Length: 345
Image (cartoon, rainbow, N blue to C red):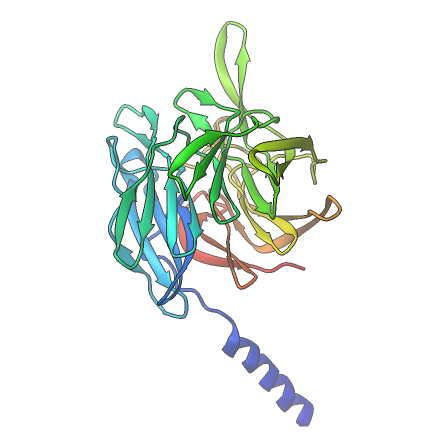
């Protein structure tokens, strides 16, 4: 009897203290996400993205905020835009202290033309307002944003209107200025994922553009991992090198984040796709449950799986060492409102 009682108490305790996350008010995918901390607490933020109908009219600029510990998301002021339509996909956001910084993305009009946005905003949650910052020198979407020394934000590669760029653009929060860093030495891609530990960057996979003789270009997965080491005396100098790929099979729009000395990649799809979840090859894309764990101390990989399958992410949020994806698409290319917590070994 004692053993049964202890077991029940143990299970109840785990359930009692497990962090619970309410679903988003509505399904959203390809949304920029960030975590911030201000005087009132810690918050998860979701900016813009794609609604359940998955057409150009479902692309929006809505914003939701969740104060950790509360049971519902609050709708906030939508993200402004210097271009029309105002809804955007594939933006990137990061949290630095009490503020979220939002970069780029692209819009889609009724003719299915896509334009990369130059917009950069600082979002101040307490005032629920946006401060327009110096625009990107080269507007990009489907990029990776990485915070270094709580001052510099690196945008690595990404798509610019008609093709990928190999640029590494650095935004200086303190000076509200941009500079170019050492170019990315992998294939220029969009839909890649990456994270940073101290001065070590790791960026993996994405999609490259492939030219052909006498026919239209195509899009192809880029199976690659590149490690960048930032020069401690000069943030614009990045020494890039090749890191062996963990599986040899590229994934598109994974979620990535740092955890202690490790960089974690979760989800995504092995079949790159348009914003509706249908592959460029016409085949519906499947979501992955894979987790890759890169140890920056010895450049080794560990490969495992999550209990969730999801794709179409713009970030992976770390809440007290619990890794979260916010929305995305499931294995049937449906846009979801779920907040998934991914267990690591």
